[in-house]
Length: 112
Length: 112
Image (cartoon, rainbow over all chains, first blue to last red; front, side):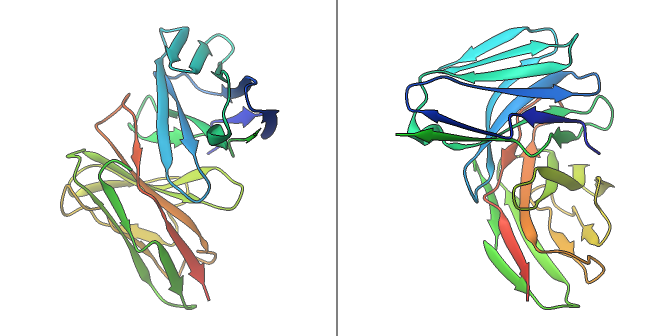
C-alpha cells in the first residue's frame, strides 16, 4: 500500500550546494526514518526522527518533521559527489510493527 | 550491510522453476523483512517476521513463500506462481519497532 512519497523525483546540483528533499505520508507515525541507496546496493540508514521531535541533525544532514502537515524534509549541506544516491523515507506502522518504505525515492546527482 | 548476508548476488531462473534466496544475519535481531524493488521504483514489502516460527504477509506476498526456523535465517522462495519475478530483492533486519533497519546488498533475480 502506498503510504507516502518523496519529492522531487530527481535532483541535480553542483558540488558544494545544498540539497533538499521532501517526504509526505498519510497515516499517523511513531517515527520517520531516512535511508540512502547507492545504485544496485542495499539501503543504509541515515537518521531517525521521532514524532515528538521537530528537527534533528547528524553531520551534514538536517531533518525536520511536521506532523501536522504529515511531512518531513532532509537537507544535505555542502554536498559532495559521493552523496549521489537515491534517498528514501520510511516509518514503522503503528500496528503490526513492520517498516514501510515510501515511494520511489529522490534520486540525487551531485556534479563535481 | 552490517552483518546481513544475501546470496547469491545474481540469480537466473527458468520459467516454471522455484528458486530460493538466502538471507542470513549475525546481528541477533528479532525482525527480518523481504522487499522487492523494480527499476526506478521504491521498495515493496513481501513478507516479514518478528519472531522465530512466525511470519506475516506484506503487500505483495502472492507467488512467494518464506520460513523462519532459525533467528539468523529468513529464506525467500520465489515460486512459479510469481508471474513477473525479475527484480532486485532486499532483505533487512531490525531490533524491533522504532529502530533503524539494516539491509543486505541484495539479490538480482532474472527470469531467462
